[in-house]
Amino acid sequence: MIACSRRAPAVSLMALALAGVLLLPRLLTAGDTAGAVPARRDRCPVCGMFVAKYPKWVARVVFRDGSQFFYDGAKDLFKHLFDIARYTPGRSANDVEQVSVTDYYEVELIDARAAFYVIGSDVLGPMGHELLPTRDEAAAREFARDHRGTAILRFVDVTPDVVQALDRRR
Image: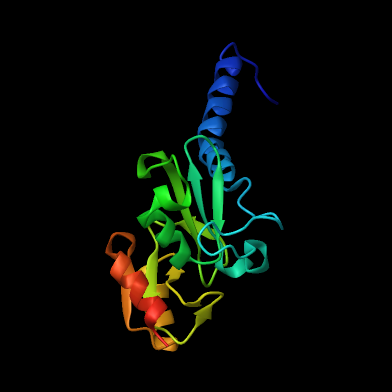
């Protein structure tokens, strides 16, 4: 037999509030990836390639006004970030809200600022030698070992010189 009490509505409200707190991060995360798939017409602002052809390599920048740009690899994403005014006139680094890259193993967008990047590997992207993003250091080490990567970098370690060296590599 279930006993009724006057406290039941309070308990229900607390349960509802708890459910909301638990679900809110999931809803916010879902919003972060909304529109994260490039349309057929989306072109990389750096090289002009149609990005949707390369779903395993997609990178993305979202600006504070909600506009977004897709790239056919992390290398072109970094080129844009290093010279925002050139590729998106009228914008600056302060306008960037979110930066994402595709994790090599999971093939899903992850926060580019938290990713680990392998360089010097034998895996080529759509634009040649690439920065290969992974979600964590263990995956980066595994990738580097399996594909002869020469270094693992964090977001802040990727410089214009690193990117230019990838373009010069044959």
